[in-house]
Length: 249
Image 1 (cartoon, rainbow, N blue to C red):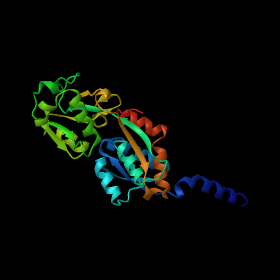
Image 2: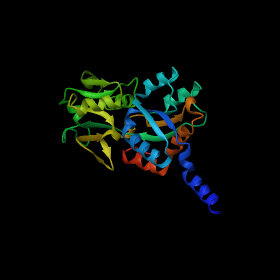
Image 3: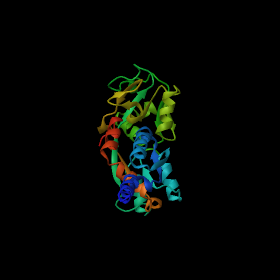
Image 4: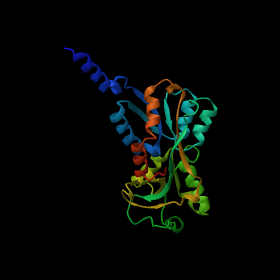
């Protein structure tokens, strides 16, 4: 009988991390969909908090958040959008962080189409080249920078097929509607290798760094699950997942 209070205290301590598990609504850049799904699964396992995620173009999320969309966290594809939202006082001050730096790849779903030096772009033996919208998606803007750096703007312009975001650009290539495209390395890379097709990783010097920032938004200020997710993005487990998809940290 005298041991029961100690047993109750022990059980309370054991289950304390799960007592206040909640949900966090996260707007996540399309290029980060695969790693974020893995991170969210580990996050829920470790904290019992659940991440409810929407994936899309960062530019579109900016408009939605400015118009009152109730997201707690933004996991963006650039650093400029979070900076603008911060300037508009739509985020919690001091929470913005760079969680990854992305890489761009010219990719075909078929082996042997894209060579290791990217000569396929200048040879022009293709009809359609997919990119994400340069106005909405940072990876699309980076693709246009790379094309300009290669001095191929005039020859490639008639072949460009734009997706609303990088996920749609990837789908154009994956389904064969475009023979090749500029996609996020994270969409076709895992554990140090391409997971299919053929590709050329665009040199980082060909475009501005694709620094990707996350931030706690104003609706998430009082949400412990939202703050926990922001902390989790900095954890060793999350960093290892991020790097496994070809991002730099």
